[in-house]
Length: 166
Image (tube, rainbow, N blue to C red; front, side, top):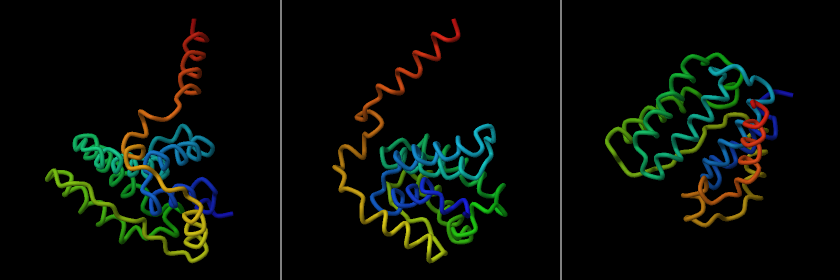
C-alpha cells in the first residue's frame, strides 16, 4: 500500500479539505508520523502537521504562530520535494498556495481556507467518501478545540511520565 492511502493520511486530507478541522488534522497525522518515523523531525508528515497547525493558528488570529508554522511547513516541503508523500498531492500547486497564504498571514489578513490538491483519483475518492461521514462542527468548538476537548488521557500520560522519572 502506498503511504498516502494509509487511513490516517486519508483522515488528514478529509479534515483539511472537508470541515477545516485543522486541530484534528494535527492529531491524526502526528499519530501516523509516530507510527512510521518518530525520530525524523524533517519527515514530510511533520510538514503536513505544521501546515495544519499554521492554519489552526491563523484561523484563531495567532498570526505569529501561523507565520512560524506555515514557514516551517514550506521549508519542510521544499526539503522533501522528491518524497513519496507528495506522489498524489500536487506540490507544484500546493507550494505557491502556501507561500501566498503566508504572505496573507504576514499582512495580518483574515483567515482564508484552501484545499489540498489531490491528483490521484483513488485517493481523492477515499477522501471524498470520508468527508461525507464527517459531522458538522459548531464554529465555536472548531475554533477553540484545543481548549474544549477532553484532555484527561493527555494529562494522565504526562503524570505517568513525570512519576516514572522519579
